[in-house]
Image (cartoon, rainbow over all chains, first blue to last red; front, side, top):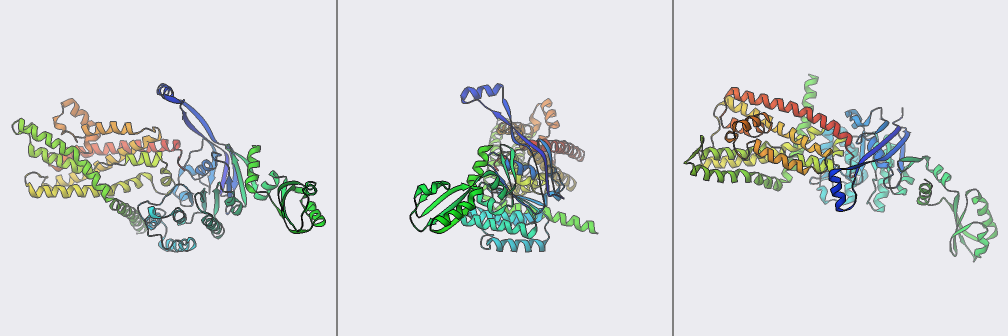
Length: 324
Length: 276
């Protein structure tokens, strides 16, 4: 059985629209204009248990709305959602005990108390058996290296420390499904990397289904086998990362370091010169020609080093969105 | 045997959650003291007013002497800090408007119970401040504080006080949930404060109102949150009247719990979980 099934999901927000200025406010006293804003439009997908899926899309694309619907926070305008066989909005205890939603910008930790108190509260709320609680907590504390901070008031912790503790609070009940909304937002590069490693490990170790939204393409590229690209509330792409790259980029990048000086004109015949800063030159070539161009470079020039790379992921995504 | 054990376990769960919340209230104790002092303002002002009024009227107004007034307002201070829930702003502003409600929706624990366990420690903490105040006053002015000496009436008065808190809490929860529909909920809350302070007997004892208004206040739920618990403790009601009060309280709790369920179910559908 699939862990998550979404069929023709629609979510429309009703929003009040006010004309600008003072008279706009006066007019709104008499008559209010409401407008329906579709956030998610007729999306369908299935996610198997143990999958690690990334949702990509610009701000307002519908990623977070989808996550909110999947976790039961929002009432879908139409369509069907089944998560572990439950309808999320019904908030059955059995369902809630198997999921967790971590939001980068919102926290569940008690601001005035040390994180440990929130952990203990969650132990009671999720009715986690004592031994299981202790084992999971010790494990999470040692992986995330937070031994020293769990008894310090939350308000005194740094953003990175708080995020680690948020994760612990969210994982104590060993959820089978983990929704991560922008988990690395505001974190430094080292911390981002650690967090990614941790998510990957959690997914593998517990065969947990993980759905992640992120602005940082690196998060998604390094973590997710499958990505779903959303824009304007619709799915533009659903599949493997490599497929997306293949489908939406016709080019590959060849960076070469030459031993001797070369003439720009000679290289122009091989592809588009993206960067010419001798001894390093970066060429854009057609995907199907990449191998033959590489061979030609090796044959006709003295090459010290050469790399064939996929284009920058940010460029790929930009390409997808510009087409939509 | 098994069910008894699991029942005990479930109770332990509420107990532990309550204690965690109590820690939080103690952690923010300065806030608690300030709130308590705020709740003293109205009773103290009213007391000054009635001291002048009783003196001008030759010592008594209706059957009330100055010491009757003093006792009444002393208990008003206790009831306002112990029995009146102040959860509505938390529900409306923090949970619904700022989106904190999401955290509650995601947990396998009822929102109503979570909030109840959050509110209870504050009431107990502030109530104990008020009780210590009353004890100190009673030590100095022996005749001022006279609660009923009948154990049955005292017992019924305690039941009335507990029901008063549940009634006030459920009402305030509904008030807070209105924020699902109104972004500017402060206006509604202010109107409620005005009606509440008059109809609950906080400003003036209900005896002093004209008959038709009094009848109206006896039907409305507010007097069962403040006025009746107080006069029950003061021993002004007989057993039959006390039972009638309990009946009215149960009726209002029943009505409010239906309204709460309806508001929660409808409101959740409009919730947009903003700020995430």
